[in-house]
Image (cartoon, rainbow, N blue to C red):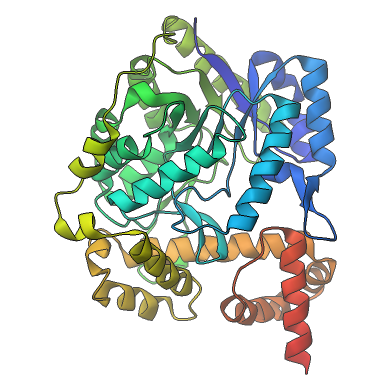
Length: 435
């Protein structure tokens, strides 16, 4: 049985109206559950209007649904237990409605030391971090039986990126845990760091791949960095590059347990002129799947000794002795550094830290700065979505509001996980600043 073809469904009116005709071409849609939630007055998690709209689509269309989260933070050393319990309860309730074929999130951590930085950030490539990911996946299985993580685009690596495939093997320790292979993310990392994407892919446990993402991106602006360097961004806002298609042609047939090939596009990036190219991309992806009709294998994945793998990917005594307590201390430093007013000084301090300096041998200040800028942008967007007062300030006087936000961001820890909660933090900060 051939793998299925999917398309990412975004909770935005214009996106849904423009892309409705494309759903006739696919077998399933991929949704991000967190975008279908809102917080209520008591801080609970409840469905928003798009939740019911997507549930109606499932009932009326017969399309299958899969889930791809962005905030479970599978790599966190000590995630907030209360928040995680609420999320698992909400994910389980969503699974009752949408019958997710599988649920994935991003490799890495978005929650560091109780702060929500939103952007998936790399974890150190050590056994303790692999154990943290394994623990998170097992927790997710209480809500959805088949779970996994995605190969993420990291602008700031904590170790040799070519060791990551072995880390992936170690982290996929439990049965029914899987890999979502995002080919654009792999290609983005390869371009930014100067390694061979094919060499990385050759090292991955391709038998654990349940889904493959195809997407596009763009380049950073030279003005973003003092060095004027340009980095590739995983922004999902343009066509799939030809280089990514070439990787798909080569590696899709080598994933024997692949269940889905998904074309991704973000909200706010689709206009009338994009529909024909998106249709062509979906047809190209369908043709690729039809050339390898025996992709899906009902046989169990090859046996896998996760304990041996967790030791094999590091012969360094420092890495082997690195435990969850150390990982938690590193997360505190990173959370502070990414929100520091002086990014150069923060990065220099990380590289000189006695305990953690070995992790920064493959990190660059440019990558660190890009990650910090994206973290700021994501928080900025969350605030505008949650606070009508902030949105009014931004629309009436962008310069003044930007000045406010530049003081707010480093001085108020990013503990909010919803626009409403971010708005409450901002209102308290404004009131204190006025006193």
